[in-house]
Image: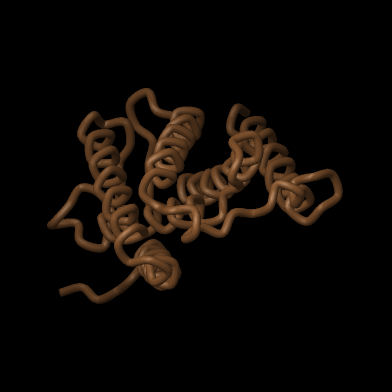
Length: 196
């Protein structure tokens, strides 16, 4: 048995462990509500990912258990539910403020995916798949689970960021503007660099 680990193996383990630890801390707030949301988002994320791999849209060259699965099951079933829990727990109450909140979260997620695509062997885009497809599916997945989470998790078990925090000059306005604007500039750089 080969025990040599690549940076990809280490990243998969670290991502899975951090996601599990933070998810556990969030689920403790209400095991029934957050546990159900975690389970549903893990199943949905794994099913979508499995279908897209089967359709040969993308593939995962490096996995922790390559003999057992065509995708990195541990990372998919820990990271995406963790991200869903973060979103549902802290997203603002009203939809006009949820959009900039998720915009920042999704841009951070896409930054990680683009890094993985270009600097690791964790993911490879294949047949007619590109960054825009991933970006679109991140939005679909997280907005659907924001809606589902709003029906599963009761308001008293959420901790929404106050709408006033998104007003001009406030902390959320600053943080989410920095995330979105810097990732848009990085996306422009990436597009220009990759089209050479």
